[in-house]
Image (cartoon, rainbow, N blue to C red; front, top):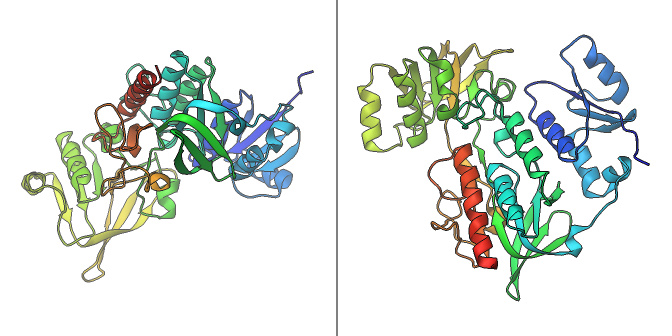
Length: 395
């Protein structure tokens, strides 16, 4: 008999771990009631029911399980499936044709294409959704106008659930080794998975300033992609942090749509290409602040202003801006294979036009690789390419 489940998730809109928790539950095909702690007296009720003050808080049949990390730990040790009345299956006891590492657009599309080719595939990931899940508004993914990152990831997952794709969620790959022509993937759950081929699609994470309000106002004035979100602020006052190519290109793009731009760089001079610097200094829409940093981000429901501090004399200036774009680069999630495949200076996995890495049997796709354009639709396409090349290899 199917176990009756009442699942409640206390959350709030901007919380990234809430989005991850909901994605995890959806990946299990579980329905749940979402309770916003900013409405009515839900926060006080949550604290009374769970003895916790942070979100998310997940409750199943009136049993408080804790937050996102807690349910992932339950998943890793097999207790979560017991709670929801499902059998635990140890996929490390099987041999796979392909293991895909990650669960962002590249990994999910790779799994879709692999499954459609009849490949015995396992998707192994610590979290679901990559960077995308925390993007509040997406309007440059064809056919999905005005969607959110979380909704796009939910749609991706709903699509792949139609196919025979086995998943391990909550385990992080810690190493990939070769043995007798096959690959062994080790995880932080003390397990080893044997496979003929691997697609690494573990993505990258945005470099952040590390300020509290940066997280609170993410998607509410604080953004990490001018290509994605810049159009929202046409003809408004904005600031860009980052004097490399990404920051310079972002500032120029914003100026083109009528924005008044303050460009902030911590080094004494801009770091991007000379031709971009020349365009920056020739623009009457862009004011450059070098040897400067953002010392405050102000606002509660939306961004109101930032404070820029000079590193030369510690003087401060408050700027009333509608948006802050942080363009200080990405960190590729590639450390676990740094001794296996070749990386560039940015720690991105170097691939060729077939998505092959320097190690036979390992492909890479998406933002973890050295592709130039870090866009959702491009990562998804790269995942498809990698899966098609794996299929050719296995044939």
